[in-house]
Length: 172
Image (cartoon, rainbow, N blue to C red):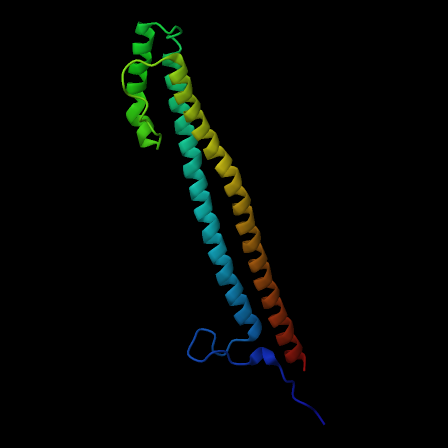
């Protein structure tokens, strides 16, 4: 007496969908690949965000370097140096504002060296925050890539299992 092999791998899935007639392993593989593709897109978005943050940090550092180069000539807290500092700040104010810097204390004419130090320190702090945020984003990116790899590996395993079942059925 022979018994026909019964396999749950050939159970029809939801009728009227792309899964109809597909084995359970292939359905699982398709779902895993779809979730993996979503994780890949999330990782790509994270990379894009990180690039934007990195670009902003570079722009802030570049602005700070150019400002410091010009501010370096004003070493005293005499009136002409205060006015010179204020002029330099006004020169770079619109560029800084475009980068999201609060420039409300940049205008108003002359600036003491202490006021300028506070402004440049705030710029440096913003650039450092961009870099620090990028480090946090890198951890999240690694997580997304790990999830992507897990889902792709799982899909590969499901396809391998389906092939083994089919080979076993073919031998019988």
